[in-house]
Length: 358
Image (cartoon, rainbow, N blue to C red; front, side, top):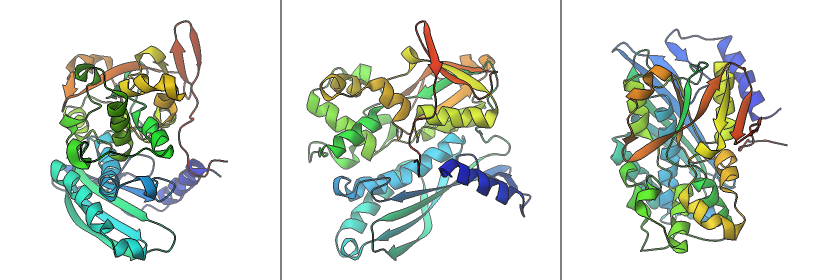
């Protein structure tokens, strides 16, 4: 049984014993949706980060880890078209970390991102562990009643879009595994906390980087991902997206998730995928394939969404300085996700990250 089989089993067990009629969407999306009496629906999402699985402690500064712990959950709220408001965060750490500056630096990074998006830390828990760091991040947000964007709303003919650029976070992880680190003080950890200041948002405008600057930018894509909260709210409030998911496991896997929930297929154009320019810059000398990293790398935390043809003209060109790219179209061939390059077309199976994969 793999991770997703296990989740599907839990989903069936939960649905068979639903107790609250206020639950609109449960297991199977980026967050659950709960009806509220104020004309809003509540979105709740949770993420678990464990040492040596979701992050490498030896190369991840505490401040960056605090940022990322919140960012991954904010991304889920964005993927539902919601506005984040509250956070609950629980963390287990080793005794030597408790007795160091780790916990203070961790929450400095957390609060910096929380303040940027107006999110209040409303509670949580702290515990001692004996095997490493474990973080449980919960974020609650709201969306106008009935307007939460689900994975299940895509229809044949819808156009497929992604925000930002892909492949940078996966390349950053490979660089971390090679022993590279964020330099200081020339690149300050908190310097890119705002989405509008995202170094990866507009590479064409920034001009070519040196190798050193490109490496630093890719490291930050992995260590300090920028959740596309602004885009999520625009797509939700203006009812522009028919379905949406955030790119945490990789484009190949997350597109398959969305198509499965919507009972549709998809065809994407390899040439249209917005590859991270820093990956392009470095790949030739480091045996990195930009397209493979974009398709399967994961942790870019961009938004993948579908749009009815009639709504395409209403899409803004950019939000918070982050542009979007049309990469394909939804098909009526249920479950068939394919990628096209010139005259070739082949199946795009889910090859992104998966817990407990054999």
